[in-house]
Length: 217
Image (cartoon, rainbow, N blue to C red; front, top):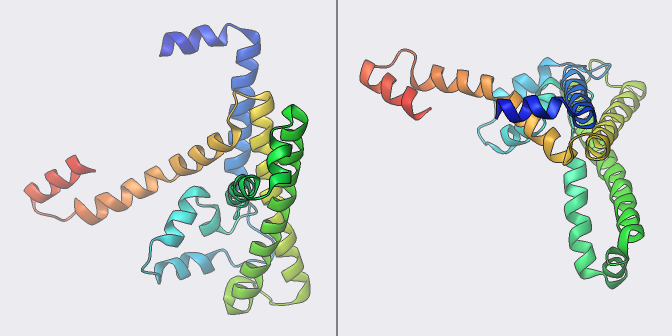
């Protein structure tokens, strides 16, 4: 594998694609740490601790911790993924869209454009629901019109930027940009998840139980 990677770096075009993809990955991770203006970043951490279900933990995993940190990438790639699924279902249900999809490269470009518009709408709905629903409960430092609008705008802009990064990686990077962003988000959570598992099943347990827990983990 290392030999293959080494040989790939000798080819200028492939090297450029790999380095560009790595640069975009760094941008995604940096954006996941930038807080939304006017937001209490500790709110969701405390709110998460009070929840017993795993649904929000899963959502936080696919956003790479952005949701828990309430960063500008809190929505991350989820609106785009949902939009893509919706468009795929609609192409089956609506003959016009089905014909458009079969219309070669031009049809696929039109579908991709519609997917982006749906992503904007979904991002706006999710950002508005999140901001208004949690804003007066402690999410916003001051619950006023300016902070609400700022939070919604930042979340929607962040989702659009992540979508752009995914599509740009597909075009100028090594391909499958959306999948790469999603995988990087999940991998970024592994150290924290492993730490939690060791604290729960290994540390402080009987030697036999600790060894078994460590092997399973």
